[in-house]
Length: 199
Image (cartoon, rainbow, N blue to C red; front, side):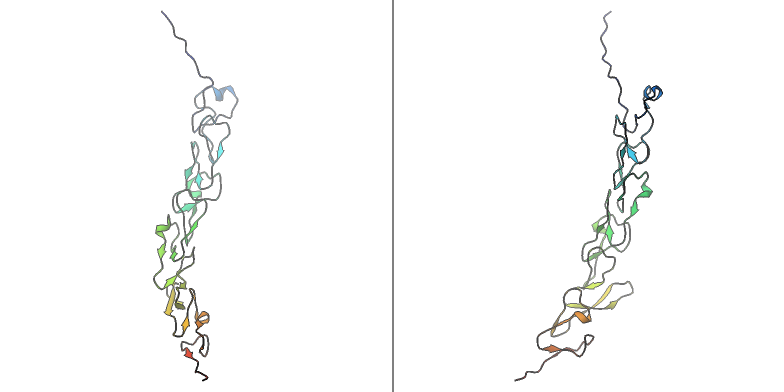
């Protein structure tokens, strides 16, 4: 009876999710190696030193690879061990899965609640109000309008610009720009008059 030679691949590599950092014979003689990859790190295979879990993710015990923080949350720290350590995305921002920092809602849109998972969840400001990027309130007025106060939600009440004047974006009473040869009694006056001709 003929026999075939068998080539054995020694030593066997520790499987993904396990760590092989123990030189004792008892830790090198079973498929379990030295045990599960420790929390806060991940072990892709044949791992001696666990790789620190990257920002934007968490690594529970036995991790083969980092698990991304869910959309609506983020992490700017390394070595997290559970999803609850990911931070809630703040007002005025959104956080896609695996985010390491919040992204601001675009100008003209607002993040009115925390934990938004993408830019599509930022709300557009109602005309003629608007906002700067990263805000939770539509607290400004668009061009050719001026701010007169806030409504019950904290958004801007805006009025059309006065006659014989112009209103840049974000104007208040004091910012209204009068046309040449125009005047008003005070910066709070709605009554803009043209100067009489000296001729």
